[in-house]
Length: 205
Image (tube, rainbow, N blue to C red; front, side):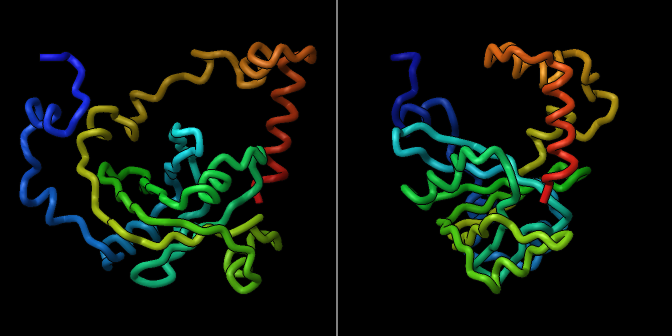
């Protein structure tokens, strides 16, 4: 037998079928528990597919509840200033399928939401997300297809919220030094770090 598990049948020779509960917990709408979790969440990761066949995952963060539940089947998420690569938004323009993984600090459960997305600059929608007088660059609307809570094992294994397991930042070089090394930039790392810190202060919204 090949060591590579290339098909679902091959995978099932190693993994048992999911339990009834693991299947039954999947909903096709945002129930009150899912809504509450989204309202508590300040951070998520969003997965999209690239036209060249590769996948991409990007972080999104904001104030608690920065993603708004419009109704049982729609979410709205602001797009704040970033690096302007537009990886996620470009991917959605080619293929609308998205996967969202919501986190709440201190909770070991996570919430998964899968669906399809579009990008909008509709004025009334943009106005929902004004912070410090600044609108988002755009708003993503997610049409919800699947919703379910993810078990705690990954965060339990990682100890992500355990302060005793936090890694000192000086274990690695500063981001400015990393950027300088990877891009062969000529300016000192301290100058890059200063510019990045200023950008983070002035351009969060």
